[in-house]
Image (cartoon, rainbow over all chains, first blue to last red; front, side, top):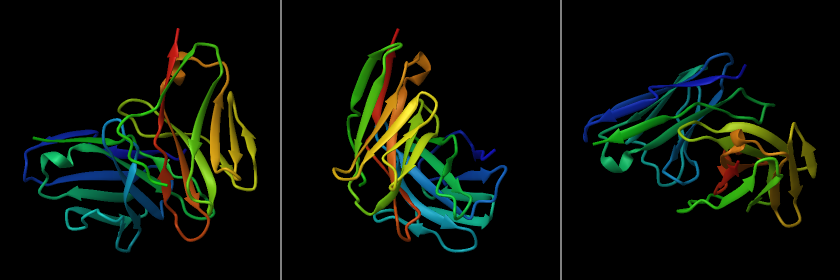
Length: 116
Length: 113
């Protein structure tokens, strides 16, 4: 149980285009989903926290207009990278949490974004 | 606290030996700690967790030790196997309000045959 999927696993796009990444909790309802970014040989950096039915909370320094997050249901959150540029190339990872009293987050397999 | 390291610390051990990976955390208000394993190109995989009211927890071949006095966390892996080669991250969660995890720098563990 507690499986989280991401789609696509890899995406290559041209500079200036927008890319949508989906995160799904397959066998549980996730009241909260998290989006992380990971650059090569670095740790995971939290971008935003997303609660179902409400606006996402972004971490300091993360542009909310550039990284649009939608958490429309208890099993799906999407991250849209708008007007992507090469510096947005990274590994994007989502996680989902079932809700209190559970502390654990379950991570997706990640999406490798390459912007040309 | 959050860390953005340019170079991952590395640890090489011989297959069959025990390994110890260390992590220093910054927030004394954290009440929950987790160790994750991340293989190349994959998401983090839960290994073991510990709450702040404990100082030791054991799993299968893994043990986590928590020293709140010096804000130090360690992961011990017994009888290492080639499949243990990966990057290991510690993560901490604040006790009140915040739901987010803060990841440590990570350590790359290489198991030599």
